[in-house]
Image 1 (spheres, helix red, strand yellow):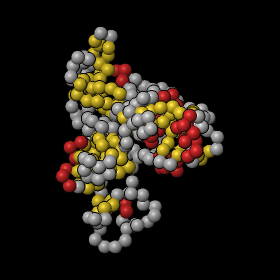
Image 2: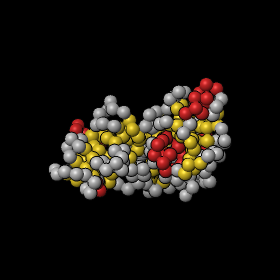
Image 3: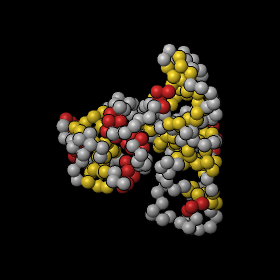
Image 4: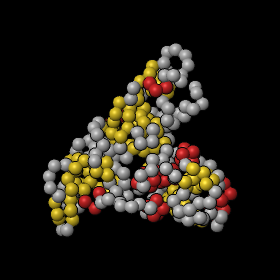
Length: 289
């Protein structure tokens, strides 16, 4: 295999001799079956991408409701090999967690939000949404109820629902550091990408996405994608072995971490954890495009 074929983003299975069609020129030997992916969407809930086709395997990433994926091949017991399109990241997903269609034109801008069966907060919750989820505007007028404005939408699987207009309000000009700080105390979840739970690179990826910057999924990939710099400023990323944080200034950093099991702010070089972080610092990166 070519050394450039990262198994996180290049799909191949040596056991079944199956690979994506784009790898045809990179794989040696006979007997390979090359597949062309088919489009899919994450359904009404966050979709867990796992390291292996098993519910007990590690979660490697998440697809948010309405995000686009592509399915490569079927695995055992209702599992499918799939890729999230925004970052090209691979994982195993449950077939029944996906749907078909086109990503909705409305993007949820609230960190966490609920979709309801009707235009009233006492109605049943039919879906959990989050920053970056995609829904479609449904037919019908906005309904005002006790000075709340309810928007009719269709969830990714086509189900009708209602959300308050405020959860779709444009973010306007976004400061990455300020947005990251809104995630303070969000629980740490390995592979997570939402305010319901996320990991270090999930936080930086989601925040940068809302600033219009597409980052890869993992910390080492993000480090390779950014320009290395010596002196950080607000909005730059700090990199450590298997870890990343977002700088608030030249020394303070916000990050999702398994030490506190939540999103916290640390000052590099201060306190026991801050000193350990400073000692393992690999460098800083800045978005320059």
